[in-house]
Image (tube, rainbow, N blue to C red; front, side):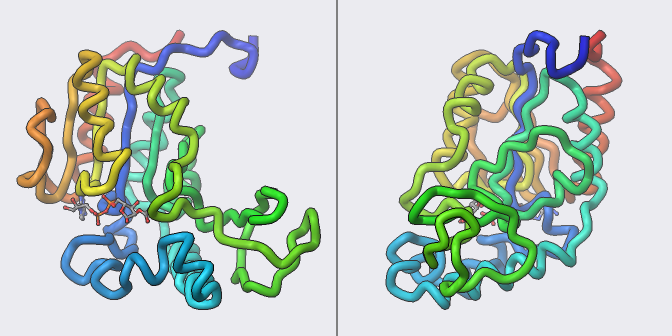
Amino acid sequence: MSRADAPRTATRIVVLTGAGLSAESGLATFRDSGGLWEQHAIEDVATPQAFRRNPDLVQRFYNDRRRQARKAQPNEAHRALARLSLRDDVMLVTQNVDDLLDRAGARGVVHMHGALNRGVCANCGHRFQVDGDLTTDDPCPSCGQASLRPDIVWFGEMPQQMDEILHALQAASIFAAIGTSGEVYPAAGFVEIAHDHGAECVEINLDPRRSSPLFDRHLAGPATMTVPAWVDDILGSAPTEP
Ligand code: OAD
């Protein structure tokens, strides 16, 4: 039986990642000192209203970020999570819009805040791969209208694949939040859902001092050190799929 035909295994481990995972690949976080939201106002570049007001500015902001993400390389933490994702009972959910987990070989990554390497047509909903810059004049490859935007979830919009994520959180026995400040909902509320459904909740962060009391364990340090060790622990201690 091929993997695609096999009955889907219930998710046992849900991993939520944030900007801290890609920090050591050279991509800026949002809220650390020197982070992206210190240099740009959210309401100027990351809301539907901003895009209506000044689409060129918003496209430029994401074109710059797309270029930076393309130059960055996956680090040891991305590679460790890619190894973990080969198990059928693991779901990797990322708030990151870079594709470093995917490029590290991770399987089935859920990009809940969208992806820099995708565009979407505001007119017909067509989604497509974006490698270079997007401009407000580009025609949609499907309907031809110049209504393209980055496939990024902006503030005030619904994150992607939420039903799948909530279902997995309710079934999980381990929930790990890696390199995220827990400032942005709904992702910030995942620990509460997992905790209420009996999961062990682990926080892995450079500085876990400001985190939710619902985490059972904290692993402090840079992701490239802590994440491979945590993954090795899990892969060493739990049976893999037959
Ligand atoms: P933040 O910038 O809010 O938080 C980054 C977290 O990573 C902090 O808790 C840091 O302590 C931690 N960190 C930094 N370097 C690290 C390292 N080398 N190893 C481990 N941890 C490290 O970023 P997010 O929590 O991802 O949303 O932000 C969540 C959302 O807010 C983003 O997806 C984005 C942003 O506004 C949208 O744009 C919709």
